[in-house]
Length: 216
Ligand SMILES: Cc1cc2nc3c(=O)[nH]c(=O)nc-3n(C[C@H](O)[C@H](O)[C@H](O)COP(=O)(O)O)c2cc1C
Image (cartoon, rainbow, N blue to C red; front, side, top):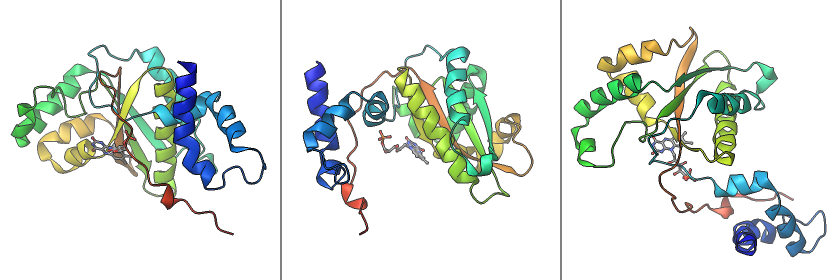
């Protein structure tokens, strides 16, 4: 099993090594790959997938608190912590707004696996950015990635979501749910992240290593 993991990790990391990732250290490529396989952070990053099917069991609040603490320990501009975070694990909220969503998008109910508009997750973290600070959206993105990765490292899946937030901002019937988030003045809802225990194991989506270029 360990050997299989090592081979899989080597395959994932090979394009980066081939692009000169080890040129400064002047080490044989295999040595770097071996080091990476023992690195749990890299393993978590490379194994994470967006999850859209979840087991019904909610994520306990103590566990969510660990994930949230990881989030707020992300790097952020001038340590302004220019985010507002709202956690919803109340089925009444999630199912209530989903009913409105279903009314406006009746076709979603044709999918027998559809449970709710947050990709079927039992817990949703809403993230709002400070409109007065130009770097706030970056802060909010880094906050989210820390949460997504710490969650995955504990066996909890997630999916970053833009479309439910757009729905909440544009659909008048959803206004009460937006109001319940109590987003502070001067902030705007940017995206949300669905969390839960995975009930699927999606394949990795391809990435384009040609997007990376070392500039000499
Ligand atoms: C800002 C942002 C918005 C996203 N919005 C949605 C969404 O509305 N619905 C959805 O199913 N996935 C959404 N995703 C998830 C992406 O589709 C997913 O991350 C991407 O396809 C790569 O797959 P992976 O996360 O499994 O590597 C979003 C991701 C990000 C970062």
